[in-house]
Amino acid sequence: MGADPGALWAIVSGCVDRADTHYCACPAFARSCCHDGATPNDAVVWAVTDDFVAIRDMLMCGCPPDFVAGLALPRARVSGIEDPRRPDAIWPFAWQVARGRIAEELEIGLAINPKRLRTQDQMHVHMLRLTPGARAWLDAAPPAPVPGLVRVDLPTLDRVFTTAAARVGAATMGDHGILVARRKSGGWVAVITDETSPQAFTQNHCRPPRDGRDTS
Image (cartoon, rainbow, N blue to C red):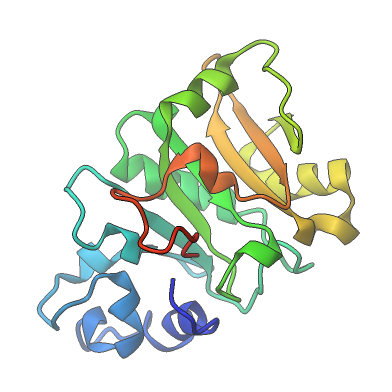
């Protein structure tokens, strides 16, 4: 993402309900590979409900068609993982949207960054593909220990934040990132990271970023 920490909120608050025009006519959607007003709406906004919206991430700009990068966002003002208003329901929403874009569910990785590693102050869950190495580590029983990472089985997909908060404490949620993936044997698993980006488990660029920084 760019330097403006309010860019995603501008999309949520000022662009999503523009039913009378193309989404790309709303300037904030420049962050979703909008190059002209003729871009089809369904290429820009992948899903909308009363509570959430999913959009194409600008990481897809100029990438091959099989590269997938999307963002799921609350339509209410929620700053990020540290916000007490964080909605657990964003995870099943993001999963359903990702399933429509990535055919093999074992390839899907949903990720949210810790507070200090994000550049946007509107909550967003990344919808990406896992790296092959991440998939192998998630499937290992038990996984090889990695400093700063905790793997937690999820009882249901709609209790991700609740489960993480019970593990690390609600007061320190902002210091952690979360990756959610499908278990090979069924159900889901979360990886809680300690002040590092869970996007390291994912294919989050179709080519190396120019400055080496995470762009979210």
